[in-house]
Image (cartoon, rainbow, N blue to C red; front, side, top):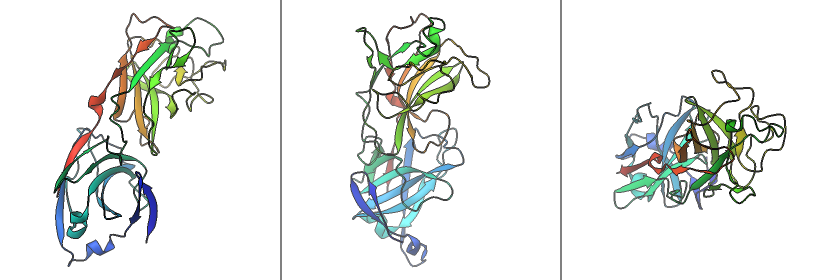
Length: 296
């Protein structure tokens, strides 16, 4: 079967790997070493791909346990295809019923330099950015409670109101296909989503359907959430976000889990002394970005 698709900024031809099962085909090993990946739960797996000569072929699938250990690090592959590869790309794929071509969720990539290479999120065939220019501001407020000034510490909105007029509070690069941003409030150790978004100057996907917001519809046109009702099991709303943690994560699309994904470029522990309606600054968390090497 032949299938055309867009991969990064280049178009490649997907080739069937059925001939690799022929005992007469020469095989060689590809070894990978990756730090910072997480368990994807049973429905998804990681899959490597060899890119070269306008072609892309699978380089094997693996899972990761709760300790970040890969289930397999050495893969026996067609020697000619391995030697022809100019780059390696790692994607997230459905574990069952998967399309034979790579998904849009490219998490790591790197070029071969001789017989080895370094893979990271910065490569143009992955997320294409190191997120070093990321920055975030937010306020504690509950604008969807009909104007009441009660429980203002029970909502978080990613905006900057320091000039008296709400402005965009997030500086984040545009994500490639296969990824979305998501805001989180960690309440008593439990992460609760504030909603997914691509644009930082618009309301997030939860704006119209959130079960947590109040009965007023006057939320700002920026990502954020009020935690006023319908609390998840184990939590009580309204709450107090002070002493908790606010997070911006980068999530695969489709999402593999209801919990935050491993990519968390912005994080902030809300001070117990935080004042509502006053701008708070987030911190970069770039140590959470995975990276690795590959050798043939």
